[in-house]
Image (cartoon, rainbow, N blue to C red):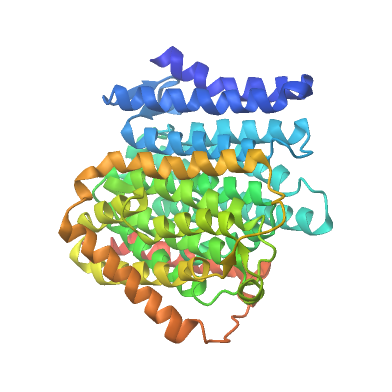
Length: 484
């Protein structure tokens, strides 16, 4: 298993450079890497025992491969394959596929790292590859958004690195388990880095502009898998250390409510999806024991939604209300929206039921409110006017391959928690969806409130990072007694 894992980790980086040397094979090589990752994930599920690999003693590299890793890796594989399919007939160069492959490999590495230094290296490679993809179009806007992302990412990772050093000073090890007994400031600094990288709570205010201004395939990768590289270590630490679990759950609830509060008011489709990504990360963190399954369903559906929104005639919901979209596009848009709202027959239903069963009592009311907010947000898509388009639809075959792969994954993933299909479990999500639709029709559809984007400016984003650091120091020193 050790040799297989090392080869699997190294292969995307090797193939990434091969792509640049053999540009005519770029799409095929990139797609092949995604399929290999899918095979590796299936191998993990077929052999559920936990594998721990120690390569360089306490100085790194510690790897842990288990079912949790499998969920995140299969998500990365499917999303990457779908993005490559969607770009198949476009004019994307070998540089794009090279960066997508390197990004895929570095994200995979973050899903099996069990020490803070190896994770630091993986997250930094992710930042560079993401920046190059965000700035791929080479417009002034894309370059500025990419540099903004890179600046925020690198700044917060400096804090993370200091925290990792403090963990090593305490235990002579960089292993995740070193958080137990580490100085409170180490926990605060490391969590700041991971929360910002994952776009969690107010530290995720960099995310809406970055995701909404990127090209749709890039947005699909960012929202589907890249931000989960910051969330995964939080879930892993919560499962390893009972002292960390209340902190992670607290931020799960906070970010679920925070993101959805912006999403329900947003009039721009891509920005709504970006804010809702923040909210859905809260569901992943709110119940860490089932966070892997929720991450899978969210990654598939959010990637599909970003790809679909990329071909709509407009991003403005008001304009879409007066320009009916084609029936075929509306059907796939509605299916994805139903899944993320928790409708039965799609894996979003099972993920929400399983998450709700693993919530603590103090979390239930807040997460139910977030679920209603999700239904309100995606009612904007479900109730868009649509009609049969008499003209030939100019949508590539690759797009449909991507959508079939993503939505098909949502159907197949039902098997993960088929026990969810009981009358009691079905009624609650349906009631939640109906309540959300009613609130949308009678309140939010009529509102003309436009939220200010001032808080998303770079200086304010850095200011909120400072506030998050203060909050984390307070939580770490107080050990969150009111939630334990």
